[in-house]
Length: 288
Image (tube, rainbow, N blue to C red):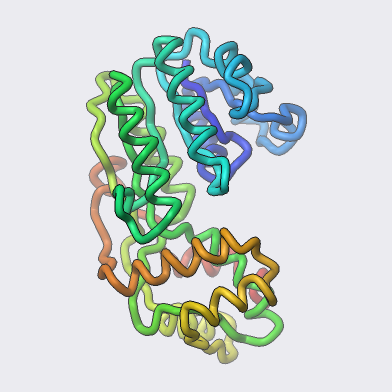
């Protein structure tokens, strides 16, 4: 049995659907089983056992992990993420889970300039010291997060950022799910770390040019200082300050460290990753 934590989130849900497409049953954990079950397509639901569990409650995790051979670990970024993931690691070790696939970040280092990435590093280290075979996925920016820009593009034709001409790797979260499913279903998990990108990195000017061409109207990029972007995200976009800081930090990381595509996804799955252009075409109605 494969247990999916964060099954109601983007990567957890994508992995659940990818496993179902392979015909592999899974146990999906959520605080609201009825809501998760209602959101699953029939094919996925037929192969999924939905259980109530709360990452803040180790006893609920212990019941949910019983008999599991593998765990997919992903939690939403936030102030409690590290504590919740460490709860899961501790309980997985107690329950004899043999393999954990964890969604982490490209710059998961003890001195990373991205606070969330420092937390990922801590969880990774705890996993490795637990004796569990540990596989780490390092996806770059999710294409789906670009949908957060849709209101500003639809209303004013503007994208705000603080990246100048630096390029960003984008990956479709569905590809993350496919990669995770491939690793979770290997007969002999080997562990290791796997960066995940799309086939091309885009700067914000290149992104807005592509969107403008698809929409048939101008879309412009307004480059701000990091502090001005933070103020915009909090004051105009309504982001919590910690999340605005995270967005600014990952954009500044792209400025400091050149991002280029990687072929890991192709090697894991045997196919090319989904393209940004295809994703934007699929969701173009959101930007109009």
